[in-house]
Image (cartoon, rainbow, N blue to C red):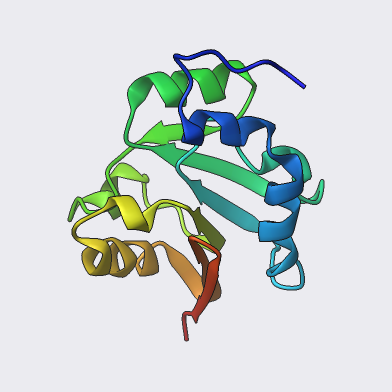
Length: 141
């Protein structure tokens, strides 16, 4: 286990919480497939725990976090999920699955964020949300 310093925060410690990550993913494991977008790649990601056939893309509002994800070899881009131009910033990409774990509780315009994310879904795609130990499902028809 890596020792955390006084500079670290609770959320930065999540990078080491692999059992927690596995637990979050376990709720959705039967639905995760295809093209996947992870919202918030700040302190690591779920990428390492996903099936190898997933086509992964990460998104974060912070450019330095996206740069770190790219250094780890991940495809990622900078965007704000409440931005009305989110679809354009995603270069028209559509996803089968969107993971949004421990993000929405930090956003004032959470309904707008979910509406924007829904526009990034392929037909039949799903948004998988975790909010402080609560799981939500949304499937696009």
